[in-house]
Amino acid sequence: MKAMVYHEYGSPEVLRLEDVRKPTVGDDDVLIKVHAATVGTWDCEARSFTFPLWFWLPLRIAMGIRRPRWPILGQELAGEIESVGKNVRRFKKGDPVFATTGMGFGAHAQYRCLPSAGGLAIKPANMSYEQAAGVPTGGLNALHFLRRADVRSGQRVLVNGAGGNIGVFAVQLAKHFGAHVTAVDSTEKLDMLREIGADEVIDYTQNDFRTNGERYDVVFDLVFKSPYSQSLRSLERNGCYLLANPRLLSMIRALWTSATSSKKIVFAFAGAKPEDLDFLRELIEAGRITSVIDRCYSLEQLPQAHAYVDTGRRKGIVVITVDHDE
Image (tube, rainbow, N blue to C red; front, side, top):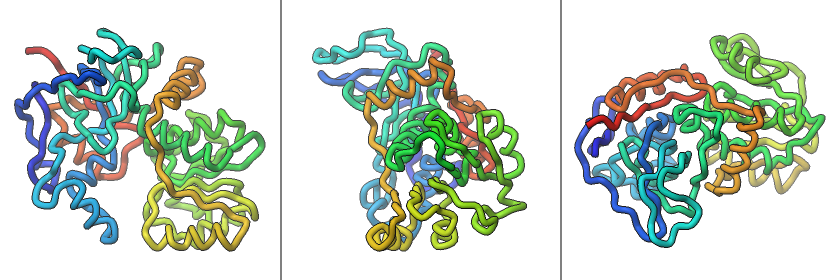
């Protein structure tokens, strides 16, 4: 099968299209014929290995010290089940599915084998494979954090960095839960954020939400370089601060803040539960949430897709389409 691989860390040019062995389905697995995948920030960070110093060594050990342990990137996909293991009951050959591959990556290929009990579910009927591929990572993480904050009707929620994949779903899910949502991002993303339901938008290049005097019940911070203390001052007294991209110092301070004040700080990432993907599918099929596609590239154009995501201008998701013509 064809796959885009990398054998060294570096710029997008380290990615190469190669023939690799097609996965063999295990007794509890499904083999998925991939039709679409995405390129996210985590893919680009893994490729270039540009992680914070405190995170660098443990990740390098986990992901490969001298070369990548998992040479095929891609953490979310949509496709069709090619075959199932003998113990699989939830799925059958031909089922259209969407899935997250997690730390195992591997979505940037024509086929991917996954555990049938993992982060895998039937694709929303009203979505294309391209649209569905962008749901698992953003949708699962947004849902996880907002549930941890117990977002509910009448609350004021601010999403900082709302124009990325997690942010797009955070805006829509917070609206679904009944909150008044303020979305923060750059000028070129504001119209899109209004279109998906944000009640208010803030252009961070013109205004700083931390200094405008407004207070929020929940601040969902998706921006790695956000100043912790200033962001915390934007919370109501019993508010919740959701840290999706925490630094080590921020996590230490978060534990202290949670222990010594009425404010709650959350920085744990989501798992991959099939029931959560089913919940997202139901909302999608009911027209409550959707994915936002910025650009589409072919598998062969993956280096260009990485280069674009590296610019930070991505709105929603960048999709990779996978051709199966022989």
